[in-house]
Length: 218
Length: 259
Image (cartoon, rainbow over all chains, first blue to last red; front, top):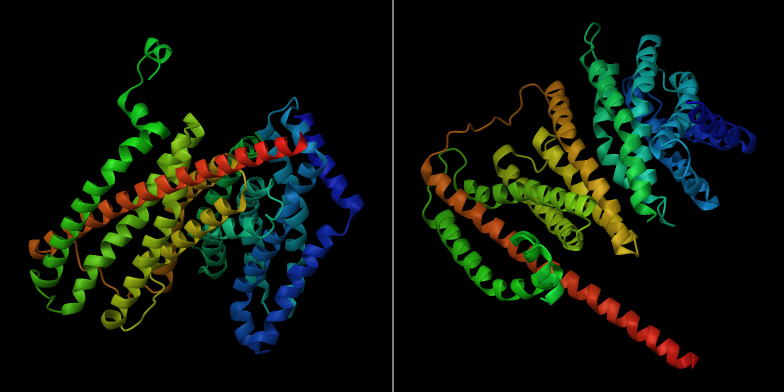
């Protein structure tokens, strides 16, 4: 277990000391949201109606954009090879890296949502539900993303391929995530479905991603 | 078969058929008869579809699009099933023919899915008044097409096809687990947005006059897929052999040049 925490700590230290990456992702997330009024006009009621969906799409794109760094650096400097021979199974390493990646890429986005909520004229209760939906849904995105990153890690030009592979698989997350925001009060079917999806995919992804990493490097 | 091989336990019929060399030798004479059977079944099916089946009392003659549309839609899912089986063969038994089967099935599956969407759009225009409706079934078919295209892109991104086969197999299996979830979520999403739509299920009860041509066409299209798959697998194997020969020739040339 301490090895898992060591991997998480390593990821967090690497990200915070070289710095900038998580911040760039947040910047991208806010910019995607801020560009929308230019495209559809500054009508506040229209923006407020579209805002939850827009925030989800911005989060979706940012998460996909940040995928490549999940395994890429470790593949390049050979750490991935060492992880394969570590005392803990590769699945545990992947799970630790996925958790660290979620902390580094999804949590900053969620922290930045108030900014978008103001820009897109989102009211307080809808913002609360959006944050809840993102908190529950983004682990599933990270989990699917880990599979995509593991599959394309040995490709030099895999940067665009992983999002293309993962996007169709993530559509249920988007559907339930937006439905949770739009749901009438008291109906939490979407929330339960989203939570189930997240739990299953988080439980399943380390095995699939580790399998892809193993068979890919033989 | 050599003497040492006969000493070993005799492999079962499937392993013998699936050996790439044996596959090449039995699939070649099988192509012509299979093509003949396919075209005969197609001829019967098309004759039924165009001349010997009634026009629908509501949809009129456009109901005949169904005989193209439904077989394609059926194959769009059937081919993915073939790819899942082949992926298991790749990951569990490391069978070289499973790699080839999975690789050559993907473009066929994508084509059948695209044809299902296209014929569906052509059918939807006169029947529902629109080419595209975000109906649950259409949406999940579109997503299936995206998955096929992603898998094809992944195949093409790798130089080493052995490694590609194992990695694509992982993606195919993840997709197989996710497709029911996508289907369910899309249905759920659609009913949430438009509870009662112009699209009403026609009901499972179809008169035999419509079912006979439909089943004939489904069999014909499935035979067509098997035929195309065999041809495509043969092409893939021959292509790999040619590539190996080319590499050997280049290596020989290099050693001659060095000496």
